[in-house]
Image (cartoon, rainbow, N blue to C red):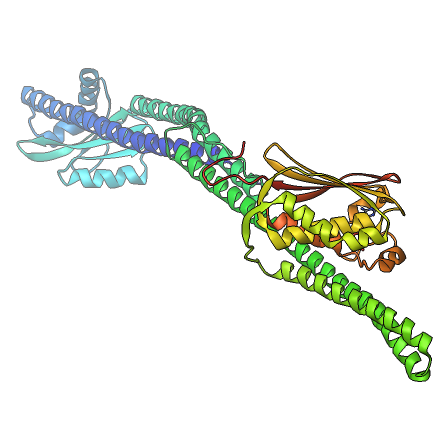
Length: 491
Ligand code: ADP
């Protein structure tokens, strides 16, 4: 389990403060000890001086002024008097260290004996044992040691005071520790919460969620959150860009594979459509080789070979035009084109075919102009007119009219033909598509006319639309932007 940063900081601060209290208590307690020692040393020194003065006074008042004999005879009496004066328990030794005061039932431990030995060499010494202090000081007469006075001093008061202060420090230490821990915990919570939120943000970014927020704080944590916000935003944008590019790439790949497929299909169709007339021509040539003298066969072969050759020629022409338009951008010879004249030109060129199919042609032509390439417009018109003838009924009608509407020059070709089944309408502009192969073949069509016408129209800013189709007939419309002299805008 991870220890929270709040707890770590709080413990650290509490321990730091506890250490401070500990060092402070050491210094204070040491000071107290030194002070207490100084005080009782001064006090006992004064007691020692007093004892010496009193001994001198007592000795002077005596007849026998020999200190040794005095101690032997009146030593015990002197001790009692001195105890009364000083208020201390006393023990008196003579110069040899022999006990003078018999009354005291005091300890004669080794350590006391050692201290006594030291005191007998005219020096003051003391011994501390638990709460008791034994202060041994020389008794002197005219600077000559005559014995040793031992004071007993109780240290229980000092020790009690010292212990009380120590206990106080322990309590203070405990209070400081817990209080500082609690305060620090709340104080660090504020910082730690920011860090915890940052950590959560980073974890979310790691999981791919880039919607981060800025923490409204005026410290480094606030700045850090701004940094994370900016970084995650940038990552998000980069990923979005990458996804966009990937989508475009997928679309391009799909388009390419579709184009590839269309191209393969186109080549397949071309091969197939070319094969049929070629097979027919070859068959007639084979027959002619077999029956060279058959005049009737020769006549039929001539007509059929001519028709099939014509069909092949037209097909090659259209296929070349279509594939050239796929590959190259042509420079069209754009000019102000008289629509009425163009329609009349095409009608004239198809006159033979119209008569052959016994079609009644009606026109309603008005003066209109477009900006277009003349040859392209002719190809478009020829293909649509040709379809209106080919897929018409015998003695059917064709109605051609043109007009201008909404800045568009419109040509409408209506026929009373067989119409196109609704379910196949979406395919009529595909190359090589025919509703009825045989009918198309009979009339020299291979399904290229509409796709070629549409391409020509669109490359020049025009369009072809199928207005309606039924068993009653079909209406196609060609739309081109009407010609406007340079400087004028279409509305
Ligand atoms: P095709 O060169 O064989 O005529 P198109 O590309 O011009 O081919 O036309 C495609 C198909 O659309 C034709 O095979 C025909 O079935 C149908 N079609 C085109 N125009 C008409 C029309 N006016 N009336 C009936 N069917 C038509």
